[in-house]
Image (cartoon, rainbow, N blue to C red; front, side, top):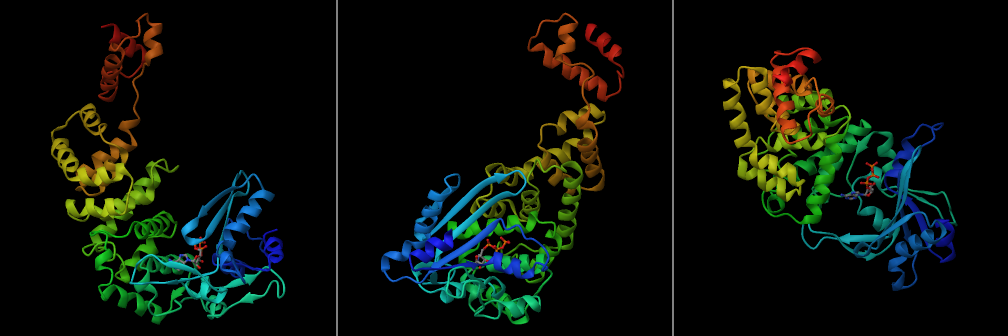
Length: 424
Ligand code: ATP
């Protein structure tokens, strides 16, 4: 329908970007379920057609009223979102008006103007992401490969389209690493040189997260960090980022030392065991442990510039004092209940971070708390107390807490002992 509508208006419609790449990479007999589709319209005759992408999306919205439409006016793009289907998941179609971007100064936001598909593809990150398939006739189904993307797919290379690519947009460094690791490709040697040159050139100094970067850039940077640190391949990706010196655009002093590498792997092992269902955000804790290697003032700067969630910023802000309290108080605890009363004041995220940053004995206690002691429950609950004839009151909480303490310290082990305990 999108192609039909475009055709009727005398426009050309193309499938572009990741979908073309993934279709070409998929084995011939494999059905590929695309969840994120990028389309580009071009072939205009009038300046007014600059909003072609939005017009097409609005038309599709009329045909499929169940979809959600959101328009990003500034960039003349529109997104159509089909809600989650329990089996197929959700589908997002982005329709953009073909555009070029020119950068008035490095790392600024792209300015957009209508132009041809070739120029639109030229502004993309890598040759393998700059392929297009024509969806309108004539030559419907034709593959457009202006920059050697097909050959790079064959030879498993991540290659940029021009030397300034990383100067214009540092998030491309993270994307290069992400695609290289995910697809099992190599970053082409000249592209790697461009990455190193961009980092060395100091161009990122002014947009470093320790300063005041543009919000649009930090949003994209955070999204790339999220992708990488949440992915199953986060370990090789982080190692490659570190090998390229690519943590420096985040913060000049951020270095993946042996110790930090150990800590982040340890955090991940703990998370895998303690939170297999991802109730907390694993990528965020991995990022926090990286940021925690910096001084407190720097942590806060980078976390707030990256617009991390409020609780994450608070954790990084208060880490030193919480760490100090836990590390100094734990050695004074003797009974299990004392450990529990101390540690239960803290959220799992902070205990994991403090745990892996502590020496063996403290780490062991925190681990025991998280895996065992925190799961211990009082042998009676509020209903049991009611059944015993007590009227509900704030005292209940106190009684149940006393019961929990006695249970943790193994003073009571059976329900009958608990009942006797309450009566006395
Ligand atoms: P994925 O499967 O990870 O979603 P994708 O290639 O679809 O991969 P998107 O982030 O959805 O990735 O981007 C869609 C397309 O937009 C890319 O294929 C690429 O052509 C272009 N693109 C995205 N980010 C950039 C960027 N920072 N610089 C240039 N082009 C980009």
